[in-house]
Length: 230
Length: 287
Image (cartoon, rainbow over all chains, first blue to last red; front, top):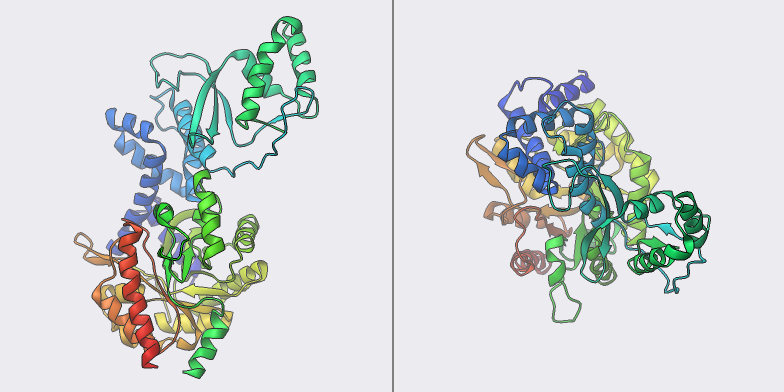
């Protein structure tokens, strides 16, 4: 008796690679698909609303089976939606929805931020002469659509910062301008914030004397929100 | 009674009384004053708590300081063709160490194959070769975690080609691996109905000296497939309560209630818990 063959054959019937040969195996196919379906539709409510509106349920089911065959690797269920997003990005599914990856990335970012460990920061006064980095607990991302307002009618670049607000216990999203986004994406944590700012403004031919103060006000606020951390 | 207590001490020496599965839905209703309800111990599923939402963490840590934890995993996939990944085992070990959890259990099943997750407990072929494979995986995990494992008899809706009976397979696996048995009475009941055998005879055929603790839970009958489904989503039924009484007359080990779906308020679970506790305490007075 080849146990590996038996198990492989069973798995292939569950994940849709092979036709189900027995009703009892069909039970497992149903249970596995159902749990994937539940996790994905809970993590991506807006995405699933669009799937329903556009009558794409069958394509959604097919994509779940295909995803189950190769791409569900994490033992943590909460990470499944991100694996599915990455799978869809490389797949043939939902090509009619050009904003799909933006939407999924945005919806998943909330779950990602919620699941991070809270930061144990010391109560140290903000000083621009110190070195800071962007917290791994937040999301800074460039989108091709206005995801915050769920407006997918036309392409429109938007730069969004997402972080956990410990006062409201919610994930807060705020738009960044192009300059702040570029600054954060190129922030060098081995240099002081001030040095970073000087280099950045010089590169962009912006006067430090005239505009540094405005940047520093935002930095201090983001330090309080634990977006910038030591 | 003295002899039985010796067995209990060896198996779960810091865990006494009855347990309840800790669910996120209960967190707001758990308090630490003397009047508030608390089970004797909580069972936690590491996969649900290793990473947890920010707002759960503080309460979870308070609970861990006040009540003992036992851990019950779902994704180790002991019957898989691949060994559990070291990265996951390290995260698991850190979690168990952080919350001072000595007792960890998993299932006689597999939930991933070629490292692809099914997120469901799948039935293994009941063969000597499979028990060798699972035994190797159990020892590997025990060495990594520095803890002895308990393994749970799982439900199955489909029987893979097998050369051993279910109880022979479990007993052989316990013998080869040295693991303890987490006896899930709801699973015994569900399997006994779905596969037409006598639940009590099945329990009697197991190596009961090796039982570390017991699970009870609810299930439902699915009209479409004409089977009982182990949903952990309903209250415990009378037949399972009866199996608990029956088994407690044979072995003195702690029981706990699992509830994973349609999770009610803690107040409702408290009623079921008290029923279990009454049965458990009656066992002690009978002894």
